Picture 1 (tube, rainbow, N blue to C red):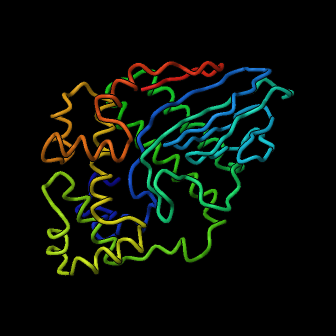
Picture 2: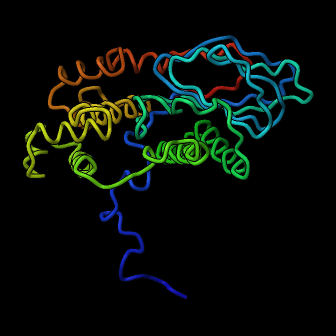
Picture 3: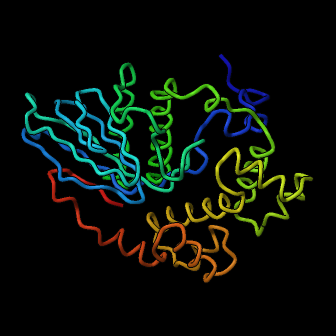
Length: 304
C-alpha cells in the first residue's frame, strides 16, 4: 500500500490550461431548478439576453422550440440554449410525467466561441447524453442540492460541478467540431493567459505582461486575439468582473472590498468595467439577485 508520494503524479505547471480544458473564463451560476412529475407542462416562450441555459430530460418526452424549429426532446436528452435564443419546452402531450433539470449561467468563455456561448454554430440544440446520462443527472442533482442546502463550502462545490457539467457537454459535441477547432497547442497566447491567471489580483497591465514574456505589445495582442478572440486586457478585466460577480452573489462583503479582492485599483474603475461587462452597476446586480422573483412555471427554482 502506498501512503505517500515524493512527487506529484500530475504536473499542471507543464500543461497549458487550454490543453486539457476549453474553458477560458469560468461561468457564474445564476439559477438552478427541477421540474418533477408534471403531466401537462408547457413553458412560456422566452430568451436570456446575457446567459446560457442547459435543460436535462430525466423522464418524459416532448418537444423544444428554438430558433423557429420544433425538436423532439426525450429522456436522456440535453437541451442547450445560447444567450439571446428564443425558446420554450413543451411536454404537454408526454405519456409520462416529466422530470427536468435546468441550470442557467453567465460570463462563460469557451475556446473558439463568443463570450457567453456554450453551443458552437452548427451543433444540434438537443443532444442525447448516451452513456453519460447518469453522470449528467448526478451533476445536476448535486448542483441543485448544494444550492438548496448552502452548507459549508457549497460555493466551491457548485462552481466545480458546473464546470464539470460544461466539460462533459463539450465531450458530447466535440466530435461535431472541425479538426482545426479542437487542436489545442501551446503558444504565446496560452503562456500569456497563464501569466494573467497567476497575477489576476496584481496591478498589471499590457506592458507588464509583454515585459514578462519578452515580446512586443502588438505581437501579443495579435496572437491573443487570434487564439481567444479577445484582447489580453479584455480577458484580464473579464476575469476580474467574473470573480466580483461570484462574490456579489455568494457573500455580503461591501462592494469596495469586493473591488479590492477582485483586483481593481479603485471603486470608480470597478463600477465602470462592471457596468460595461454586465450592463448594470454592482449594487444593482446584487439587489436584482436578492429580489428576483421565482419562475411562475412549475419549476422548483433555487436562485442565488
